[in-house]
Length: 370
Image (cartoon, rainbow, N blue to C red; front, side, top):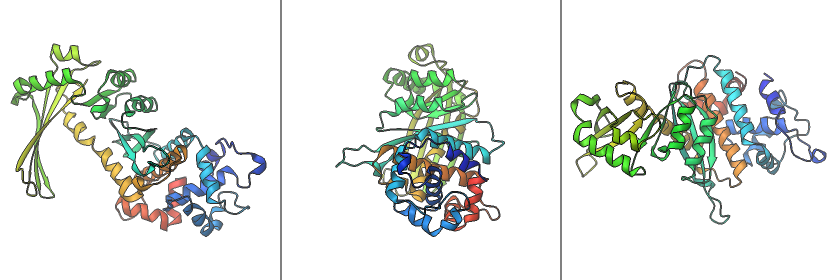
């Protein structure tokens, strides 16, 4: 059981040791447990720790009682986010001794809207995350202070990941040679949205798709789905790039995927609508997984929804960047563990399992120590 605490002891403590009353592993461990159990503000952490002091004493030194919330906040300000990430990866790997090989890794950014403060001239923090489709966990994340800076953040995130053989899916913000070159350099494949931020390539693809690309010969999937008063037909076409597209395109560009979404909604006065989207990829046009990669990319949006709705990620008003990032990483740590190690017995929703963490200390121990 001591493995997590042992790892916490390896974190560098830059505080003045003459003034330290509470060991760093104690502060970190009780903070993790409190956040897992629903603590949202710094003041919540010592409150939870006071109630569960005897239980905490089984795992860490609490001989000096519970630190103040300001002490906890200052500790979160000095911990390097990279060390927090190592702890998360170690613990999740302990729960996944036989993880499935990565076939698809969607990457997307998410703003922590409440971290913005006009009075203090603090911009909302953006967190760019990578999701494992095979194992249903967040593989890593990096932060930036603006949406446009995702272009520089994505290569940093790619450096943290094992990409060999996996297909990386990203929206059109990543449609540039630097990011695509990095993916191919690390042995990954790419499928990336194409929009008018690449005007010449987009124009060439759009013209060819209308003329020849969306013929029935290139149709690779066509199906209907319905729900919430809406009927949707989705058609997927894939075709090899022309010489002109290749000259305008990116490393190893082989295929264009064109998707048409035809929607009829009883709540929409516009009637039936149709929308075309285009994607670039190094996969061959015959690859039958291309429609699945496009649809499964949106599972990362579902993960963001869980963070916002059940863990109030978008309501978290913490303005000091490092502390806010570490707090946000702890929430992602919790979500990873709950999704990878649900409680035994009756199958329940992620929401119910998140609630159970705060109500069942035995389940909390299971999550932390495996």
